[in-house]
Image 1 (cartoon, helix red, strand yellow):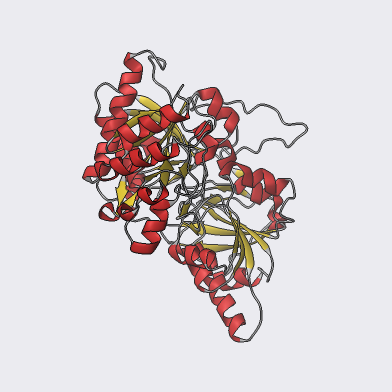
Image 2: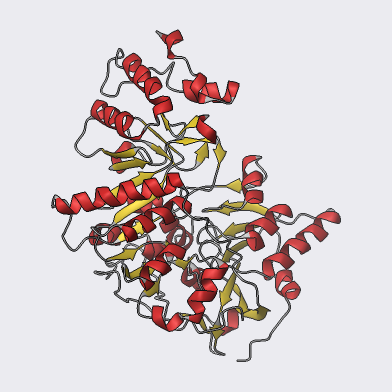
Length: 499
């Protein structure tokens, strides 16, 4: 069967108002880049005529400006899940312009298959190679592509020529059975292959192929600043100490790391610490730092869902791709983040918090409890099931006007039950085996910035007058947040008025 080449505009014309549309990729990597731009333009033209046009947007994780940015600016998104990180999409979400529901990344594929969100009308999939019989080789991000390729009524292929080398062999496409016939996920080491190197799509469903030569447009990560580097140093020394004390296997354990500059700094810290042995990763994304650690021999292997490399790093990766062929494997998000596998492999899970409270609860999504930042992503997939769940953040923001450690978080994504270790540039708080009061004392002593320590001790003293297993004075628990909203500075909080 001959599959025609079509323009981005023609491809966009097949997507209708109200359609459920699934997109390939995970973070910016592997996402479509030209069809969505044409789709946004079509939405603007229809809106100018007074005609409605919005789609329900389902992705593996965040995307990029080509997807979330273009469609948000065109007001073309009705429903969005599971994760976004583009500024225009964030603004649209926070002003109620789209119905955004935040969910765990490992759940989206199966929830689609379960029929929770209705039929999937169209899938738009970036490929780097394809055959007339519908066998597709994906690019730098996998996401939930095997599921949307299987479920979609119509498929649009965006064939990328940006990758000037073959990605053949890097993917492990696998869709688990659904209940009640689900079997175990047969991954026993991070390098185990369980699926196919290609995604097989019924050629009859493929509307056409759209050429593309756009990059992922991922900016280089900034070099670790002094604070991020100190967090990385603190955690690498802590993990080395755990090894010396026999609290983890002498072979070390696989690493999972979240995204962003702090996560990159933590990985660099592990790489530079001579007491941390060579390690492997089982994670959802790998960033520039991992590529460097592989070339230095510190990271031996990485199972991931996406290569979230900056454009410069991606060029370097492609120029040296044969070096990485036996060191990287890409899986669907529901497998890279699967709780069963996370528990079995015994991961060291390292993720980032927006804020944490003195009892160990973590907010990773909502600024001041109301404004969505990005979403929960895969952090809970890992933290709830990890051998060691670690959350880190700078102790202060905005020059000290915000403390990231507060009496009570303004929104809870990860409860105290899922957080074993909390780290800032000030130090590391080991919360294992501690009751609530002991956790509070440990966090204040080790993680709170000196500017805020006295305030935190004042709150704990006030709250300790209240009976209960967890000591809180609900009148004063959000005093820091209230002070910031009123004055722009959490340091202006005054617990004396509650005494």
